[in-house]
Length: 428
View 1: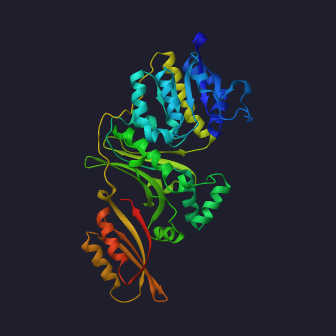
View 2: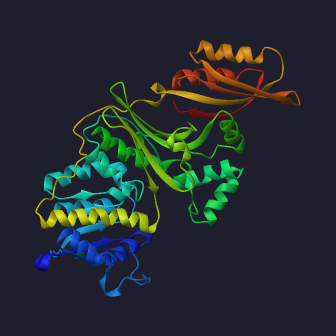
View 3: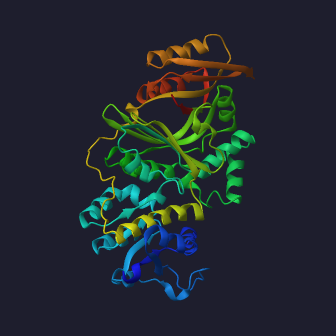
């Protein structure tokens, strides 16, 4: 650390990696003032050495991890390559060798975050990962520190910009799902293969990380019930608005009767709720706690520079810890063993859209089936018939998932029911 220079290795030089390298240069003076030292990115690890990396000197590029691992001058590893392997191996080896780590890898942390955090605590090194959830929005550190004195009863977040953009366009421009996805792809909000976004997997990884931190208990990606937005139609959006709701893809983690309920799915959010106003590609996380009451964090949840800013925020903290010999406390290690609640034991309200035969007694029969399975009706609208088929839109009271599913199975088999057109959970 001669002259207080912290040397680092950057793993990955894609969109986020190039942003991190650029921001490190732009903030050189600020980093010195905020930490008391300077940052030198000594090596940048890439898969293809022949590929030109704009703004990164070719002489610092390497494709050899051992060159970084065995370099005692490198004190800090910044991992932005993504994926579970080889990132898990690299981070594990870096921690075991005493190097500090900053990561933006939600895939890895949603599967092995607690394992890596525990290892880092044992070795007395930092493992920071603010950028792994919601890009530039500060939420990881508040969960570990600022909100640690308040028992958090619920975390609810719009944590995927692609799906929020699609649902916004379906609502505000009257687009179909397919039209909105096409526009999102053209604008670069959606990948060529949008599966991870539109099926909810990206959001599920993020809510698993947040649930683990909020409840100090291990929650992994496979624990999260996940449902995407591909079945949402323009008609669903229109009816939701008639009832006073906006449809959003949300991740929810809640403490319910000594268990953690954790899930991702589309949801009707009341227009008065702060999350209902989050538009386009913006993300937001809404937190309720017994002491802090309500708090919401909102901003850019992805993108080159927003994500790079979160990475560099962690880098500044780690540098300060190195220079003040204060590394090793990471927070968020699971010291509790709270079970994850089975989805069928979770309570929800439901929006149910049916096409039914337009004849007397149909609504009464459906209401009877619902009532026999402990499903109460809070609101109902019947639209005029077309060709002898009417549309019935029902919002239920709160009901156990298993009771609703039992009722739905019977409703689907009724001779008067032509089609179950939409099923979406309702907040509240």
